[in-house]
Image 1 (tube, rainbow, N blue to C red):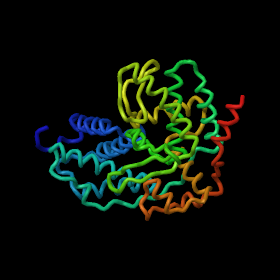
Image 2 (cartoon, helix red, strand yellow):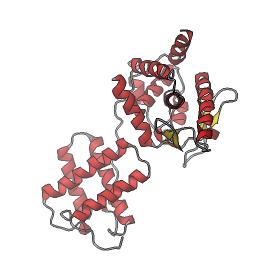
Image 3 (cartoon, rainbow, N blue to C red):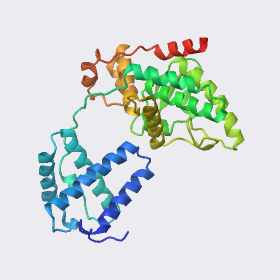
Length: 326
């Protein structure tokens, strides 16, 4: 796109630039929830421009305008995190405009980022964790090889989040070479800003993954595919590609949430993992390392609710053993 002044908010080109911004985020495999939040946050900015009837073209949007928008957010929202998130979304949007050479600099970066306040954890309740695992085990009994393979994939996903604390962004690019199943099973993460590290997994994971891997290799031979990703994208009949995007992972959880009518998102299941680890008296420093948190990150919201959310660490093994007896 050629450089030049940014059109006013009344010009449809501004909306096109927003669409380009969202297309860029989708291309980066941002989750559905992240995309939804950014749309909501930038809609707030657009409504602000319309409400205040700004006559200045956005090319003149500068620090005073940013501060005025901040005052507008202070009046409109009582939540500190809501205000912080909307400013952050605007900051990223203007970064994009600068990259596209349609804006000279980012005025939002002239103000300091407000602190993020820790929200109250809302983990998947223990009863819902058990309900999901029970259903996944029952679903595995399907006769179709592809249906069974897909269910086993979903079991692997659940175990990596609930037992290993992985995020969807970790799962999306996880490779078979990141799993160590000789001896005590572990999964290795390789973040960009720190050294690789491993997280222990239960023996149950090794059992499930071994079965999954046998069926996966068989399915890959049928479609003449070969890749190192742990997960895959598929239709009901065949594997389409290796790897599974963050959006694809969230769609799986949405399917089970609606079908079983339970509290379930990747985030809520990961929070359940944190409470399970706290119940096992894992050191806080170790939890922060496994979760990828900075040493300064506070686990206080979890510690305050530790007695309210309790999880039996052996529950999934017990359910599996009970079903296999029948």
